[in-house]
Length: 305
Image (tube, rainbow, N blue to C red; front, side, top):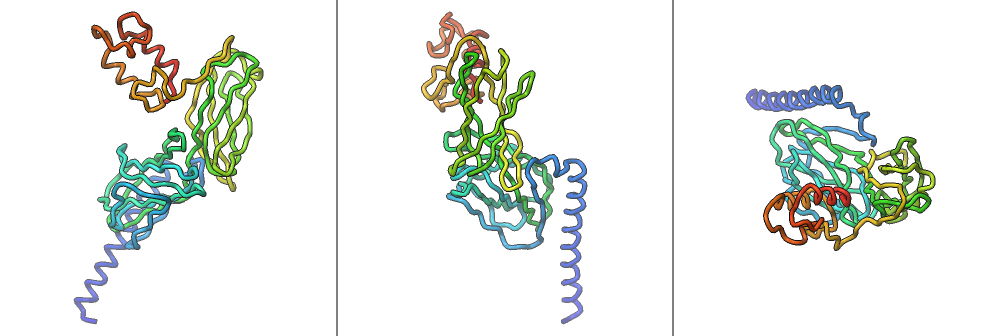
């Protein structure tokens, strides 16, 4: 080998070493600022220099995941055949479908060196979205970062907005198949209940309101499987009182964009007509001729998120 070839090879090796060293130095700092122990799941972060592009698995994938080895690979489990969504700095960049066993693997490439905030979330069979699994990561040129051991939090929903004291309220959602599910009722005296998901990842718990005090409560769920645990789900609220009222389903008059959810989209639509003359009849929930705070209070009461 010629001297110039040896020098060239040494330079490449040195540059690669510097690239890896800078990555792991930043990763060390990152673990001090954002300890891995803060994740409910046993997440593993590793890096490989100049490796082949990881394969994206699951079902169908939409969006560009890139072909450069400079990027991030996400591996974990969510719900069977759920939609897995990856956000980069708050913007959706790719979707894929988890396998029947709820596992998924997604690679995002063609990234420049720098700091990014990634979020991974899942959408269940009923269109409910999970809490986003969010973390910052520093990307170094030529390095593939592997994020594995992700366990997406369950989705959760209730069948009632308000339940008469003594009646039952159904708590349900989706997680990984055959997982143990802990349901936490947040109130003055917190209550915890256990159930299990079925082969499709669906769980259901029928809660007796006789165990709860009168007033407002919130429910969250957490899943456990093979020694791993998710973070808590979104919180959903319900009231224990003198009468029972069911959550509105698709076709609710307060679902202004007809997506079977009552959330910020409906809030923005309603906001457009705030205090304007002659609003559409379907926007005037209180039927007083105006869209005002009364209508927003009604929207908030039926909020599903």
